[in-house]
Amino acid sequence: MLQTKRTRGHRFAAVAIVATGLFIAACGSDNKSGGSATTQPAAANSTASTTGGSSATGDSTAGTTGGSSAASGDPASVVAQYTKVPTEIVQTEALTKKPDPKKVTFIVCADPSCVPLADYLKEAVTALGWTFTSINAPATDFGSAVQQAIDTKPDFIAGTGTDAAAFQPQYDAMKAAGIPYFTCYATDVPGGTANNLYADCYDSSAAQQYSKVLVDWIVNDSAGKANALIVNLPAFPILSAQADGAKAAFKDCSGCKVQSLDLTLDDLTSGGTANAIISFLQSNPDIDYLYLTYKGFEPGLPEALASAGLADKVKIAGTQAAQPQMQAIIDGTEDVWTSLPEEYSMWSLADQMARVATGDWTTANERTNAVPPFYLVDTAAAAKELVDLKDGWPGPEGFKDSFKKLWGV
Image (cartoon, rainbow, N blue to C red; front, side):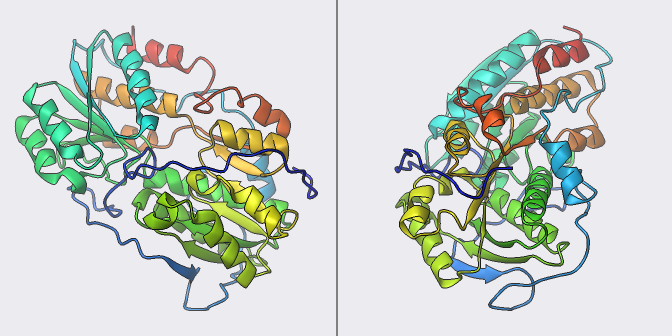
């Protein structure tokens, strides 16, 4: 683990956010009913709340860290398991035959972070011998791009980061046209023929499992005495799913306390997240851990902590790290981040397409593969392995060849 005394290196201070960006661009509320992918818009109120009940200071609950996620056992064991780099892909079932040629259209969201996803999926689809086309979506009208895709009559359509509620008419039109839809970084639950959704390669269940492991790191690091603040942006359900998972996991720590800070889109787009976090910390001086549900909260935060005299008191934990977060761990300004593989996720999305094409697709298999492999990075040595990778860890070594073997190509 990182030492408590930390040096402060040069950090970037600006943050550029587009509302339709990767990971937080899910536009509807969480829907776990299966049957329909329709969701309802989420509110985006800025509030400070506590876990459980109505206490203004947060709850302490007894128990041992456990739960229903993939991670189980005591926190120390979980941390030991999940600080190891995964070496295997999740998918283990080979296709029963090589899929026939298909045409795939991918909707590229308006944020620059979605561009590499198109490249990743194109490589995977091309490996299957299929045809790939991408369509750029306007920042405020994902549905128009979906309609454009429908008009070209592809075999499959895929998109990322946007729940069906944001483009419901076009989503319904896809089903009417018999074109299966595949997504990632959303909260809709695939139901196959029931709702025409055949994959969500990073969904609420994944967010909850990742959060459980990150909480175990905090519990272990604090010897079961963490006073944590979960920072969330309720406008995006995929983040709220993670925050809910973290709150549930903290309830299993008898000596821990947890509070929540819900930010708004205005906080994010104005670059005001660091100020909001510092203000909350100053009003609640016992907090010693920050749990960031989104890396977009992080720019400028270490500097703000230093200016407030909190740099050596409050540790930073967060999810889905990229290059800047790895550098922060190397610099000693931050403590732990989950490393989630975006490139692998796109290959997993292509894998589900191949299973639909061959008739091998099942709900159970898709649900298992909705949680990509991941691990925790909490040392400078581990961060140095990733710091040169702009988009973070791509996935287990050789994962592309592993998928190709299962596909028979």
